[in-house]
Structures are given as structure tokens and as C-alpha cells.
Image (tube, rainbow, N blue to C red):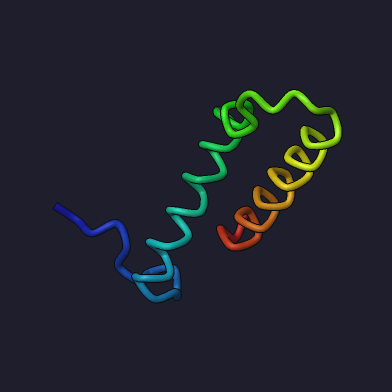
Length: 66
């Protein structure tokens, strides 16, 4: 059994694990982003949520080192 987060990439194992979590969260946002919006029907609130989701996704991608 080999470790997945072993520091071979030059980053600390904890940083590798954290980046893995960020990548997983980006995938969840891609798959279930609409569920985050839920039952918000107001177009202005919906637009704000869509922009917030996009901003969070972008930040997670940056942290994931995509």
C-alpha cells in the first residue's frame, strides 16, 4: 500500500491533501451547483448566488493548483 500524499510533488503531504479536497469541492460545485441555489426564485438573488458560486469555484480552482 503506497501513500497518496507523500510529498513527491515537492509540496508537503498536508498541502497535497488540502489540494485534493479543493479539487473534490470544485467537482461537487460543477455537479450540484444548482442545488446550492435551491428554491431562490427572485432573479436578483439568483444572479447574486450564481456570481457567488462562480467566485467560490474560481477560488477553489486557484487553491487546488489547477
